[in-house]
Every structure is written in structure tokens, then in C-alpha cells.
Amino acid sequence: MAPARQRERLVVVGNGMAGLRLLEEVAALAPGRFDITAIGAEPEPAYNRVLLSSLLAGEIGAGDVAMRPRAWYADNGIALRTGEPAVALDSVRRQVQLRGGDSVPFDRCVLATGSEPIRLAVPGHSLAGVTTFRTLADVAYLETAAARRMPAVVIGGGLLGIEAAYGLARAGVPVTLVHLMDRLMERQLDVEGARLVEMALDAQGIRVLLRAQTRAVHGTSAVESVELLDGRRIACGLVVMAVGVRANTALAEIAGLPTRRGIVVDERLQTATPGIHAVGDCAEHAGICHGLIEPAHEQAGVVARVLCGETASYRGSTAATNLKLSGVPVFSAGDFAGEGAETIVVRDEVTPAYRKLVVRDGRLAGAVLVGDTHDALWYAELIRSRRPIGPIRHALAFGEAFAEAA
Image 1 (tube, rainbow, N blue to C red):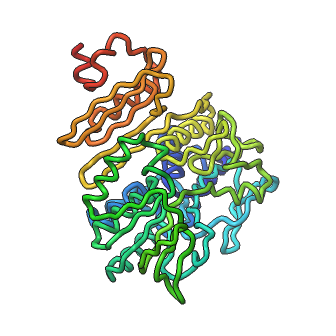
Image 2: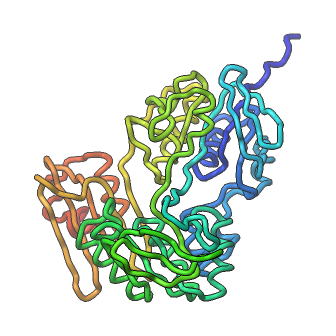
Image 3: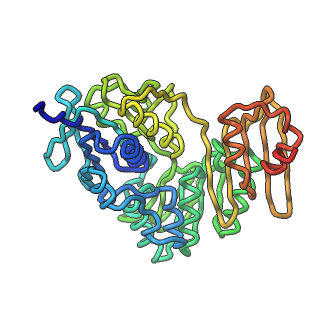
């Protein structure tokens, strides 16, 4: 009798949303095919980071951010090791070393190490009371600080900064949001859309300072104030730095894998070393690190098919952003700048609601929706598919139902 074929050893480094989606895809495509180990740096199994601001705001409970329970991993034959960060990757010996000293061998490896928040290198950045907003541990820290009701300064008016400010304000903390640029979410919103978001924050009691650069954080042993470049000082007992994230490429660098902004991968999401892939925030494809959940899910699906022997390739993703502030939903996707293109704008000053669609070469190229995002998925699909919109052009601004009727 021939010996049973030994299963390939698949190690997934990173148990965030990208890593979990990969495990789900592999489990669905080829149950039992691999001997799988999932390695997570945080003590909890993968959870929904998108909901952290709602958790901080007290709008949901801790159980609402959970995704798959530990039993799911066991039921699918996955050895889950949480709270054990990977500290080294040997691409020659094909093994991952954990902080506790164990080594996990692999035949195939997927790096889903995510990203880490950037801390501004200003004086006082290491004082007690200066933190970031990225993990459940960060939320726990902010909840403790919020209970003291000390004023907070959030540095950064992008997606993470707005979510942190909103969560703190809903928790009863006086918040000042400091942003370097001339409008909030400048990478996702045009001027008018950003103005409506600023109005929504103002309705929550959040003070927004634009064109404001942080010079220093002051305090003896803990935060007491933030000083801006123009000399203004904002008294506070808490500072949240939400100025962006950088891809976590440390393991890849140790292994000698090419990295730039992220871990460089090809159309199969494979690194320069065969059998080692990268997905999610840590991956750089065609010079782009997306840093958003939807591209991470798309990448996970491609890698799962490649691992299972199918022909699959990743062609890139259309960036899309969703946000909800005090009942005001926000969506943007594609090229919303509209330079050299046709622009369709619909406004409702009473609601308020705003819809901007950018049409280029007879196709929808970008969209910004504020206040009413019911047609967001439809617009996103039109942008991704690049389907000609000629037959529905006159009804495009009014959404899917009107366009279908037309």
C-alpha cells in the first residue's frame, strides 16, 4: 500500500481581516488540503477593525467586533496561535520563528502582517497619554482615558483620525481634531464633500482645526497640551496620533524579500521567493499599497485560488471608502477629482446631501456620496466594470432604480 500523501504545510502570518479572509477562502476551496497554522501577534483572534470607532463610542459591544470564534479554526483544522508575534522568516529553511522561541515550518507561506500606525516624531511624542488608534488594546486604553473626561486632541483628519475623534466625542470627551491639510479626508473627498463631513463633526461638538501643523506635545510626565506651528496651544490630557499607517514589512526584510512601501508582489500576489505570498496592507502590487479592506479581500481570494492550483491573477482594485458620522454616511470611489472629465453634481441643502459623479470617456470614473449612500455599491460596480453608461447617462445621478427604469 502506498504511503498517504503528506499535506502541504501552509503558514499564514497575521490573523487580521486579510489573514482570516484567506483562511476562509482556502477552507471553502480545498477543505483538508493543507496543514494550516495561523499566527497572530494580538491575543484575540481576528476582529473587525472597521467597527473600532463604534466600539469606542459605546454604540456596539465587544462581541460585535468578533469575527470567527476559536472553535471555527479548530473545526477547519487550523492551528491558531495568538499572542505569539513572528520575529523572523527564513525563506531558505522555510520556517517562521516566533517570539517565544518556537519555529513553525512551512511549504507555503502567506504574509498578512498588515500595517502599523505612524507616530509623529515631534517633541513629547512618547509622553504618557499619547497613543494611536488601531487595535482593541488601543480602544481599551482610550476607554480608560475617556472615563476621566479629560480633553483630547486627535492629530490627523483622515479616515482613522475622524473615526477616533467621533468615538471619543460620543464617549463624552471634549475633542479637538487637528489636520495639516485644507480639508478633511482630502484623499477620499472633494471640497464640498469634506465640508459636509466637517459639519457632521461640528454637530458632535468636535472642534476642527485645518491647516494646522503640530510642533510639539508638552507635559512633564504626561500630556498637558499640544503646541501648533503657529504658536497656539491646546490644553489636553490625551493625544491620539492618527496621521497614517505604514506597511509592516519587517519579516520580509529579514528574509531578504524585496520591499518598497510594502512587500513587493506580482500578479499572483507572490513575492520574489516562490511559495511566499503577501496580501492586505503589507502588500505592494504595481507600486500601490491599498490599506483598505476590500482590496485585501480581493487579494485573499486570488492567493487562495493560486494556492489551490487554480489560475488566478490580481489586476488591482478600485479604492472605495465608507464612513458613517452621526447618521451621515459617506462614500467615495475611483477618480473623483474630475479634471478634464464631465462632472454631475446633485445637492440637497436641507438634508444635507451631496452626490458627485465623474464621467470619463462614456464610463463612470469616480463618485462621492455624502448623506445618501444607498446607491454606493451600484456606483462602485459601474466604476470597477468600466461598463459604458450611455443608455443610462440621463438617469445616472438618480441611482440604480431610476437607471433601471430608464
